[in-house]
Image (cartoon, rainbow, N blue to C red; front, side, top):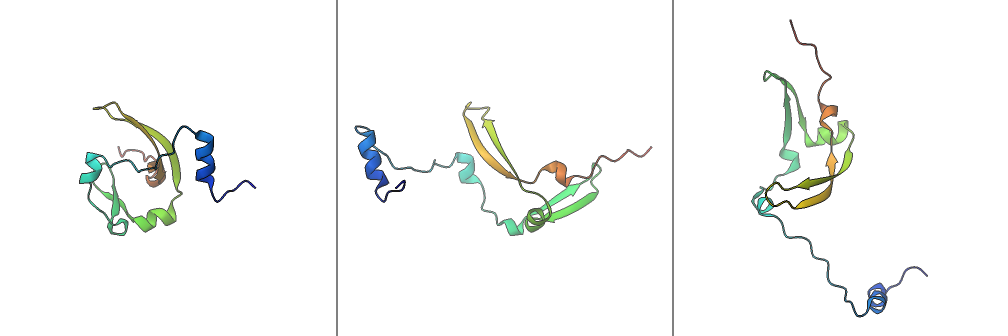
Length: 106
């Protein structure tokens, strides 16, 4: 059978003399420690035109129900430390939220 109830033991035998450590989540960054706790249901996204006119206000539920979810694997590089991190980001594309280009009034 492919599955084993004692997979860790079998791996330890195969990998000897190496050991299997415990997987620990990375410590949050200093910025993440200062980030406030936010309830998504209390947040609204307000989209305004170039002159401040309100185009639309969307709740978190609106975004999830009305627009397709998109995932992208993105690498960000810190400009201070040079450390690069790759993560999968998910959400709504801005181009899906914004109206098509409108001709300028003359």
